[in-house]
Image 1 (spheres, rainbow, N blue to C red):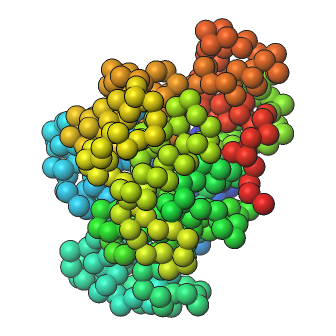
Image 2 (cartoon, rainbow, N blue to C red):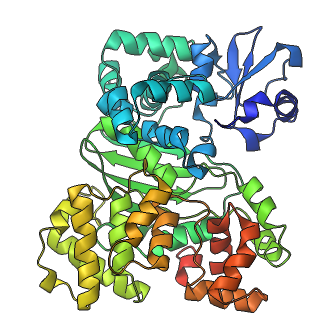
Length: 493
């Protein structure tokens, strides 16, 4: 079992007294005298250390009877970086809870996906986070409800249903207990929004830990965008989303202190999942200060980090989609990979309505791709075999690449497939599975950058040198790629 930062009392007290926003989401401060809980950067005068106690999650604070602070709104802080940098049972469970699995399938469904008993899941989450899966899901429902209350004009009964509550009474009681305000009072305190009355359209602010360099993050997504599924328009990356209850369209635009997010959803019950997947795609829960400080210890990497700190790893909203696209991109240019993908989208994608125009389809599901005629694929025969084997494995469930995946097991299964070499497996591990230590020593761009910097350029020697960058080698990849003038490294004009 991991020991969280909340157990390091002196370190937590220092973070609270200095109002250090870097630790928002790492732990929560509960004030014994006022019975409220805050994020470390709360702007109010810090309480006396004797009156502070620390918890690893908002759910644990709520379980202990503390209410969310109205000033710092701790429920809206970035998520803990732990769940995206670890691959153990607790981290995998937290990723699934964020993806709404408990609300849709219950705790038995969560346990089944992870291959453990419900008792084991309960015990490990309670030991590390101070709350079980139901309490963690409840805290998430409360946050979803707050977003809908403050950003829409929907009736409260509709909000309760969309947020995942089974009854309006439970919704009212939970909001009062967590926020010390009735739902109507929360709405009265929120600023008026002109777009709030459009059903299914939500404008949100996605928080992150500073710094965040948007160049490679949005540049990569825009440069590799598949026509019909993704586009860059008016300073925002837009794409379609396949969600549990329907589909959605999201527009994401970088701002100095947040990501502006505009969501159009066919079913508001998908809000929590859509937010979670967008945050994951943009790597918004990373701790850039800790990552960059570690990479700076290499004197050859340090100038790259100092020049443009805060690089994130561009990931995905759909792991299976990315794996398919990785195969399409084997040994071809970015433009050729987009062309291959666009043909698949036009022939096998599910049409969607985009109220703003421009986007036309969801990326084809693995089930749809499993039925296509391999002869229709404009690629070499060996890559056709790689493609059809992959989609067959995905559609049958023999290969799982969801947020709950065990990284080591998924890597091993991918390597067993024909046509899957280290580069393909590592890029899927980095961008689909979310492994922060995935590394691409055979990538041409990485080898070229290494040679220019004076790093070893052969894969074996570079891998040996990169051992010092662990566990953040995927972030080192972003800094090395950024030495090139490729469009993936720049925001579109």
